[in-house]
Length: 188
Image 1: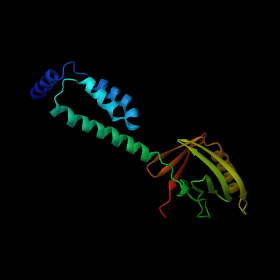
Image 2: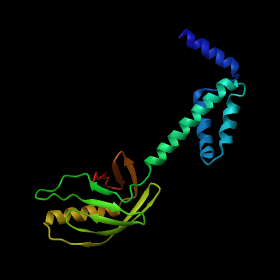
Image 3: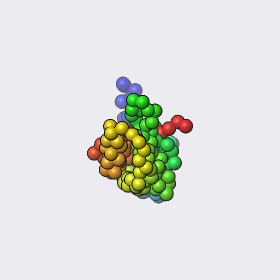
């Protein structure tokens, strides 16, 4: 504890007007959008303005560390937000008694989708823009099925058409709407 106080006091002498960490992070986050667009000088200006008297020996490694943290954070966010095009997605539900079939969805990059419900299957159009999504179900092929499965098909089709957004949770695509639908990325 005593050593920590001594080191902080020494650092405060080197950097007059030492800002609080939250103040520093607020400025870094404000500058990060500009920095990510390629203007690293904005990040450097903010950093140097906050601690103008820091020695180069202390300032450079600290700046590199902060730049790395911000870059990794933005890279992880960008990777997490990629829609799983051209992947087979299976609805998180148990098959109905007497069947092994589970509803499936596959979206191609050009927006065409193959949709399999409990009984019916067909094509559709899906527009993905950022974290928003709109699903339009086109003609479905009707197969012979029980009234219960037919009702489930109608309910699932209605829920799909009301989807407004999406997000990824590990290997699960969550479709956001009045009814949240969870589709797992197929392993085959």
